[in-house]
Length: 208
Image (tube, rainbow, N blue to C red):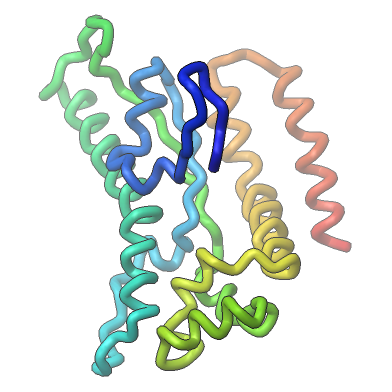
């Protein structure tokens, strides 16, 4: 992306490509709670990779794995590291400090899709533009072997609408947990009441 800065024109890319610790900026800025939204499906969080396919992986599969490493694995590893530090602080192995970058316990809530976005992308591959399909299919062995890669490249209206719908449904399903996390300790009944309005609307729209 081309942006004008105080030092002139500069080009920016997705920070996940270089950022090895995605939670680090908000921690250093003094956050006490972290709400993170990931894109790795809930099922993948608790299942190991399947190795039933003994065929040589296609180039599309390799590219999909590399993109997963850049955009998915860093968040999961960073959250796990944060939880371990919290446990060490609770058990007294690490003392909380009051230096500018103090060591402190942080609450984190991670929201992830209830479905595997790669499988969703596979079901929408027919909607992909011809040139994109031609490029990806040239790197793949079959539709299933390129679904990871396609999940990053597919920006068709139907696929994006499906992603948005999943986001609304998942947020609605966990709305009480999210509100408790955001407002606990703030004593903000008004804030909780305001948050209830869109959640009720989402429930009604999901029923329709």
